[in-house]
Image (tube, rainbow, N blue to C red; front, side, top):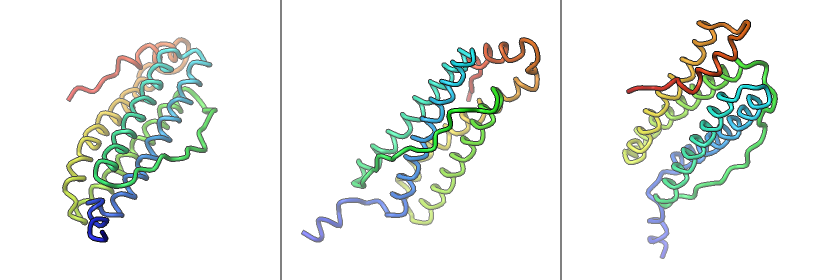
Length: 174
């Protein structure tokens, strides 16, 4: 029976912990994006409200993908408690600056996880997280392009309204 228990998971504990930490990060990002969506809606940025609602759903999907992977490998995925979600934001531009910072942080977490996978010779998980690393290229690109709209269009007069119109049109083409 003891030998059978050791077969429960083929995941290294360090990798499983990193994946569970990423689940919490994705859940926090999803909740933050929902809060950003609310702020945009309250301030008349309807297109950006939709953009952030979509981002929230995408982050939740990422969280669930990680959750399923851990459980499918015999690990124990942990449903995280999410706290400290901001409700107020400094400015319209601040939302997108925070978005880029969050996405760059997520990229770094996945890079760190890739390094752990290589060190532990967990090439299965390494291959799994490649999808997330590719996704991060898109996430950072979109945030950077939207921030460029602030520099190109400016925020004076109808600038913020024009930026809000453009937000949903920014796409990544690979």
